[in-house]
Each structure stands twice: as C-alpha cells, then as structure tokens.
Amino acid sequence: MRSSFVFVLIAPLFVVAAHAADLEHGAQVFRKCATCHMVGPDAKAKLGPPLNGLIGRKTGSIEGYNYTDANKNSGLTWDDETFTRYIKDPKGVIPDTKMSFAGLKDDDDIKDLLAFLKQFKADGSK
Image 1 (cartoon, one colour):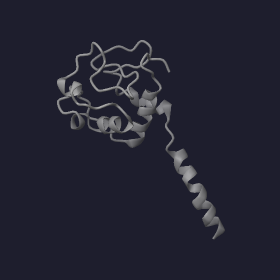
Image 2 (cartoon, helix red, strand yellow):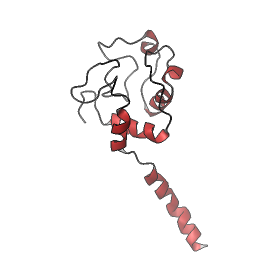
Image 3 (cartoon, one colour):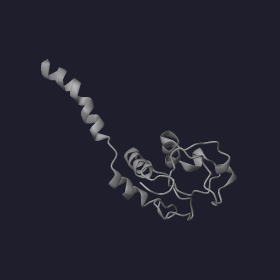
Image 4 (cartoon, helix red, strand yellow):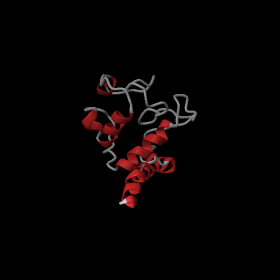
C-alpha cells in the first residue's frame, strides 16, 4: 500500500518531465517553416512574414508584408492556444489565408516549435 501511495505522489513529476519542450527538436520542426518564414536578428519577409515576437502579436500586423484580408481581419492575437489550432489547420482557422501549409499534426512537434519560436523577441534577439 505504501509504495502505491508514493507512486501516486511522484507520478505527476514524471509526466511533467516527459512533456517539457525540446528547443533542438523545435528548431528541426521549424525547418518545415523555413521555406517561407524566418526568425532571428536578420529575419525578413519571404513567402510568409517573419515570426519574431509572434506571441502577443495580432494576425496580419507585420508592417510591409502583404497579408490577405482574411488574415488582417481575423481579429486573432497569437497566443499558445491560437497558434496550436492554427498550425494544425491554417485554412480551418483563417479561411482564405494564403498559407498553403497543410499543418502539423503531432502535439509534441507543435509544442516544441512553439517553444522555439517563443525564444525570439520582436527584434529577433533571444
């Protein structure tokens, strides 16, 4: 009985550790995005806008990037939940977006990608 009680107390610690973000893996996942997007101090618009300072930013708000009206007028602000929904199904979240990416399906890939992107402030510094 006592060993069961101890397991119940410490089991959540292992669950938290198993779900910690992996920045290296996030950088690898970002390679799928890098065809169209950049991050870092020298980031600029490519086919898509730079992703520096993404969290907390309103969709369609990078000056000088030619967004669709759907993206500019979505009324969304990027946060963890919005990004997660969007990256799973971009056209499902913002219909008529020009982002042609089919989406990421693996929750760990998404979590790690998000952690990787969160490193970059609006100016591209970490």
